[in-house]
Length: 305
Image (cartoon, one colour):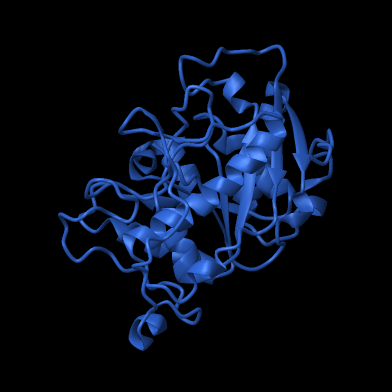
């Protein structure tokens, strides 16, 4: 593992990030940076791997309810303005909703009968060349040792239907300030927030395949495998063989191969996911079928709880 450079975002925002953004978003970024700088020391690595232009899907492990703030700071000081997917109820709070709307966050309606529809606004932002940020797990890790959990398929579906680069960012340390599970002790003495940006995740093996549940599950596994490996390097620990499942409340074996039933897209289906039409997201025809994240109908894919 390359040594993590103990660097804080010392550059002026105008020099660190030259992507266009509203004055309000810039004000929020600077204010949050000033307010939260005393909370912990930032250690950044791989900021140069974050593409400075074009639509990108940033995926990260989710270790705490607090981690969207330092993660956003990492993305901003790496040169991009993040647009988070967040549950719709947050937008109903006066101050929070006002800030989230003005910073371009994407609301996710968990009560929608067509769960995949929540990805359409995010796909539109990617098509517009923006940086969309998702936590594939959908909520903070419930793993007793805070390893990445089994994730929902929303990030994989969005990546495969838009064709944009999927940029992994592994993070560690925020859980010491706001622990996600009782097994993690709060430690306010050694507050170091580590962020490592990796190379784009290779999902080319799924190109031209029909986006069945099996294909989406395996693509999601590829994403989570990369994040887990990156986190293992940060922690200098070996990850567990299985992956924690929220419903089973235990670690389960991970399937890493297709069964052989995956079929190529027909010419008509292939056109539906062509890069020229990035906003085509197909929802389940039957509202009673599982949503794109494998959840019960109406649950949102990849949004924070």
